[in-house]
Image 1: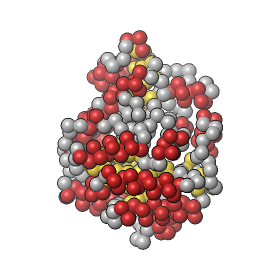
Image 2 (image 1 turned 60 degrees about the vertical axis):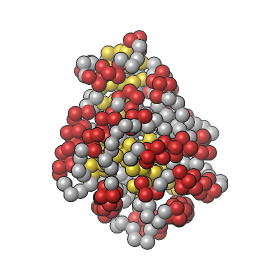
Image 3 (image 1 turned 30 degrees about the vertical axis):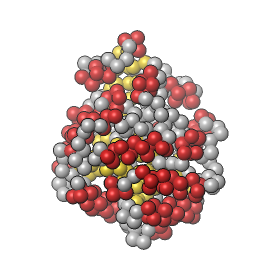
Image 4 (image 1 turned 120 degrees about the vertical axis):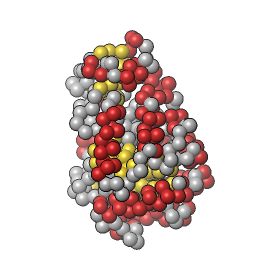
Length: 372
């Protein structure tokens, strides 16, 4: 896993929107780069480039600007799925890591790694949402359109948001990452209102389809350190990827987690099979022609995304849930973007809709908050 400094060194140009050039955050970020890399204006000229070249260049440019519209939005979910009522904080866009399956490869209109400087607006929108239902827990995350921690060396965003959420009654912040860059979380008191989460896969998958990310052992070590610092932990088996020998590999992952982590401080675990759009598949094959992602049988689901056959997904989920429950029967496990039948085939008492799953989250998080 690279240090934050090495990631910063790979940025060739920092573009600053003229309307934010005097913003304190823009000035703070720009001072971390030599003057020769700074440009006032807008990055241009990428949309006409060949697709793979465009994506490679995006990851070497940084753009500081204002966000457009609301920066705190409900997770869009997917048609025909049971969703969890999650709220997305759009503080940054794109990621310098290079996972083969990343949906951000399809965001072709974004010309650079983008940081929105509108932290005051983000806090105001979160406060408005929290006040709309005082007795309800709202879960917010920064890891939908970029890795939650990879930009912290630049922005310090998480370091300011952890204390902000610590002073709320019904807000939970989730910082989801594939890094081990937890330095910004040290020395803070989350007061039970921040979850540090990791995407989890076997090391063989990490090596083959998650370039530039932390190893499995580094992720687990960082998660343990965050537990010891007072953070709740989230784990995301997302995407679950089928390959020859997947059972042994995933079972060993869970054994490694069990050897290091305290299950009483794991607030939730998600499972989600590999899915992709047609455009995404074309991009993946163009950039990573030898990827192992497309082994197995897929079909086009009602939301337009390709997924493993439902029978295969159910079989994989049943085994993963069995191994997780053998580790600790009290773990809160849920599916991300799965349909009702899959829930019914894998859980004895599944939620029937999005509202019911959201309420189960509500009860689970209140239980953790009371535990302290």
